[in-house]
Length: 341
Image (cartoon, rainbow, N blue to C red):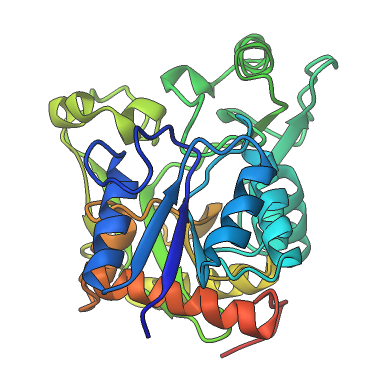
């Protein structure tokens, strides 16, 4: 069946409908949809729900391919846009609004996962407008992050703090520069591992992926800063690469996969996600963050790890479309703890 696919993005685009000049992920996804023989339209730089409503009524897409990371400059508003699509009975790809809202609120997600005894770093929450007081139970070193931003926004080498003075300084940086509340969490020394998972009820995990730091100075912490993730020159200079995790201890890959699926169901995620973990030298696994709707560009970790198990890029995009259609037909696609296989 030939589908009408509306591609929805927060990015500015020159001319909707054209592939040339688009941002990488949008370009890769639209090209794959066209190779799958579906019709596409692109709605970019979305600032008003009315623009979405107009194209839904005029073009009547079968499904919306959601590539939005923010709405009106705020990531926390994206679940509300998806809630609008649900009200309009419009199927969409990726995570449902409830799961996305839970995962995007790092403090709420951490509390929920702690209740379910998911191994994760201990943490403290520092809201804006209040003094920074570290709980005695929380020893240094600590990583200071935004409570809502993702993609390592605001994370730098200075985010790793070892004193109350530096903690206060970095929390104030998050409050003033990013305009969000802050979280300080226990720093876990170890290997940086990722795991992709796809599905609504029946879940499939991809091979364990690892970020390797080959040329960083000995005294530099091995953390996925904003520069590490997005600065290509910095990556080349310091030998920062990602790929299949090699020489994992026996049983670790299975333990991570089971933990990943459990987290996915606890948070009620759907569509596809990537989980970030740390593996210590003594074999302990810690969940760092759940990431619904990770980057779908052809050369990013999620698509590369899918390819490692024989799921080529066009097939992956087709599968994301089918999962969105299935969730739209059956409801939200949300599942709680203990659901699925």
